[in-house]
Image (cartoon, rainbow, N blue to C red; front, side):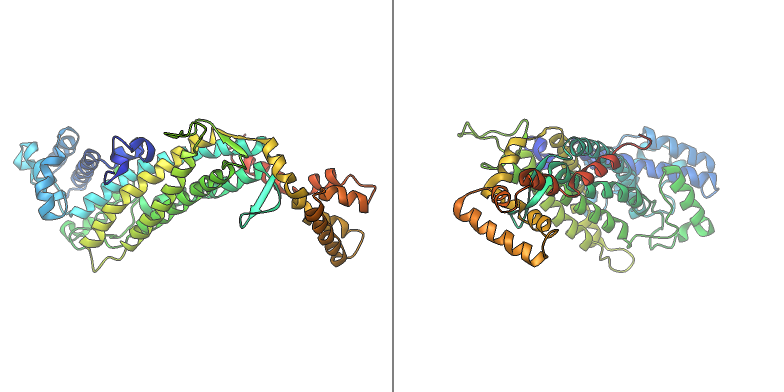
Length: 443
């Protein structure tokens, strides 16, 4: 097993996500850092902090220069950050010492790395939003089509009362709808520029420092926090919480599907299920299993990532390094879970016959609560409950359906039809409300 299954040629299609992984590659990081260096020079030139001619040269060079990440490895191992080696390589590649001297003016390594990370996370947020939109559309369609399809609800693993398959799907989707909304609110806390200098004071830029930071934020399309945030990892902590909550919601979908596809229940089918090396009859729910595993992994990584928010003094290498070791994998696993959930949602087919069989199991005792409330309309509630309790005992002893016994003792009502209709409660309405909430604006 490789150290990172997401990067493994063998396991990447199971646990990895190419689109997200590209954002966390060495080349993507180097390119993003060069973009930050180039934008910094450009805005400093415009504000007169460095010569305009040098600023224009450095900005142009940041797009043209090619730097091999592996060439920075040796110095990175010594310095703990790749920026000193990157800046040296950039200046050398510029082949213009008179301009190169102004590269990285007044910034520190963390400014460049945190700003470059924000640039890549901006693209990741767009990817997550588009996947959530597609997933919610698929779940909304599924919930709307099966809003009134009755099935057994279960609590503590036991039959409870009837619900509808559409309502179950809505239960998967409502948290994801909230997560998409909270992702938009998360952007300004995470997608922000960092420019604070060596100790967070911006002293090298004098009075122009805040102005440079604001201009750099605008140039990169990031938010200006208005202050140093080297040791303030609250945005990253909030991102960790978002990833854990999203992965948990997707894992819940996976857990339910594992139970709904198990032998003897088989209330839904998932097209393209996995096979066994030795048992030809098996249709293994591989996708839902991956969702559950990813949810557990992201929860652990998110805890580590939030723990990395404990920075000592103005900057803390150990805490920062912990963030590097954790954030990329959490982001890739969250991305994989979102993409996989969309694939699964498009392959789910409910089995109404199996659901009906499970509703009728044990003589239809699942309707006991509905029967007690129906009888409470003609007798005191405690008496109605006692009557239904007696009928339930008789069902257990004789095997006769609860509705048949109710019709015997309380004739004049088609109890089977009445209980089936009344037991769903608000389930269909909830399913339809979720389906409507997933419709694009204006439709």
